[in-house]
Length: 87
Image 1: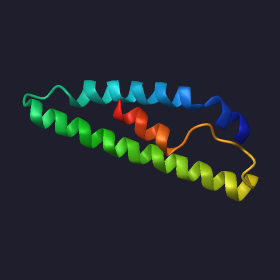
Image 2: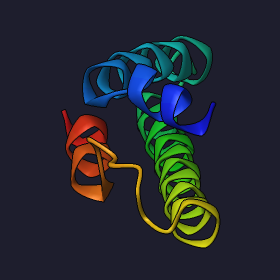
Image 3: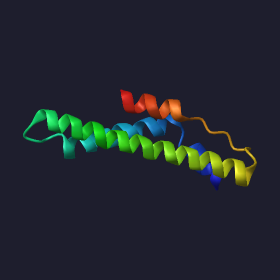
């Protein structure tokens, strides 16, 4: 089941999910009266989301090493996460 989960959530799905998340964050936090406050808030929220994505990656790697002896290959990593949040 772990292999199936990892392979169905490839780098393409990761990018699509991050793009959808960025749109939602911008929609909910980007409409403030002061554009400077709005931009700063969106930036901070997205930075925290990026940290959570990196935590998920770390947990996935740890599970892969501890339970599956590194047999499951992930097709995405922290570089893909950082790149997707920077676009």
